[in-house]
Image (tube, rainbow, N blue to C red; front, side, top):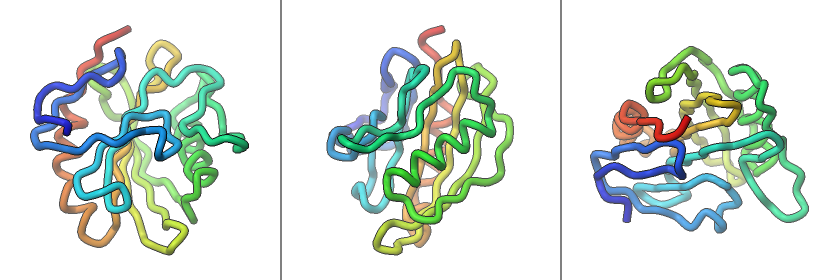
Length: 169
């Protein structure tokens, strides 16, 4: 259980959820991120990536070559890195849009929205907040089924985005 109190994400940043979440075993989902869910990993969740460095991927799967992060990536390139990584992990027709500047804690960052379908055709929707700080990618993604679950927890995800405090630099 992820209690509604400050939660450290690696040694890079912390967030402060206002409601309880469930933590997931990241090795079960091939992501190198910490992952939380409210209603189950097939319905919604948040991924918290931290300190993604040069040549690191967002996902790990034996025998699959995922896109690698470069420390000189601009926001548009990070968005494409996210989309390419999602496609490689099984997201169907993933599209990102509405890239714009945003604060990641007290750092200059960016955010965007995305949509995709699961292999079974379930429509999903998400939002990402990210920043490249000291040549390392810090990124949070909230995602859920487009019908019902996205709106159910989007405000809580936004509140979590607003509570980011950087703990390293």
